[in-house]
Image (tube, rainbow, N blue to C red):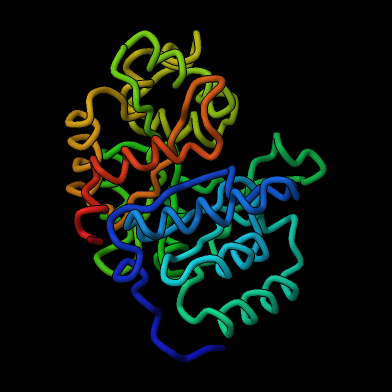
Amino acid sequence: MHSAPRPAPQQSLGRFGIFSHELRSEDPALQDRRRHAAAELEDLGFGAIWLGGNSSVHHAAALAESTERIALATGILKIWHENADTVARQRAELEDAHPGRFLLGLGASHAQLAPELPAALAALGPKMLRLARDRAAGAHPAMVTPEYIEQAREVLGDGPLLAPVVTVVLENDRVRARAIARDFLDLYLRLPNYTTNFERLGFTDEDFTGGGSDRLVDALVAWGLDDTISGRLTEFHTAGADHLALQLITGEGGESPPLAQWRRLADLTGVTAKSA
């Protein structure tokens, strides 16, 4: 067993990163666009790129070649879909080529998305948080609120990384913003490990119908004017988050990857000013 002390990755991730499914695409036609987008996120001042979906080490390795400093993380690698020895080898190779830039995020996925499996581990509950505290660098929860972050920080203590995914819609019109958010939340409202966690936070079955109540949507998705969104992100940091992996959701027909809106996020979070 490795005897070195556990690193404190929050020191290198910064306060904000980008969570993106697009940047893990394996479409050959999109590879140049992926590399360009990753390099621009680094130039904008974001501290990390979290590769969404069932991402793997090789997805991060492809972007490491086109960037110099930004951290690259899987968010998440599903433990049932990858061979542990292969992951360990790929991780060692990436660490050797780009020291200190890769963070391996692991998850158990969901029973509904892996029906051949007899069970799936709930990744949001207190047992998983204690496992993150005792055996990992920290926790990377999704679909959570500042209230959850405050509770999670109490479980984790001061040392481990707490880097939640925070969903953002850059839209001020409440009807359109909530419509975009509800389209995105539809899947999560059909996954029991998420709805169970919502119930722990005080939501009820009534909040899960019709695509989610306004109360639930507003709790899970930051939307509005830039100052409103910035204030909401501050709530997560105040509650105890070290780093926020910002997942930008756009309506149909938006740019992919959404570079123009990522630039706006860089401005409202202040990462561009800090990197200048």
